[in-house]
Length: 64
Image 1: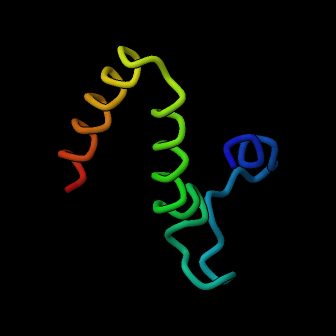
Image 2: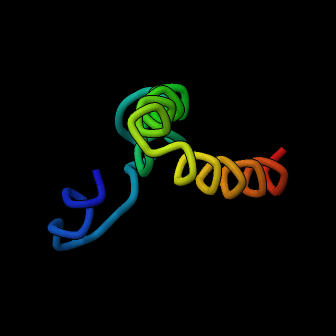
């Protein structure tokens, strides 16, 4: 999605008048993103996965 965004001349994150849910256009479905991230964590080394989980936990704490 990021590659698509930076190659668009207007670089708009979303169009409020298009589609159904305007909040997911810039970043995609958060549940799909979390599922993808879970797969990445499983593929990483245990040490790298722990480090990334710590970062994710900090970010989750900021949002939630």
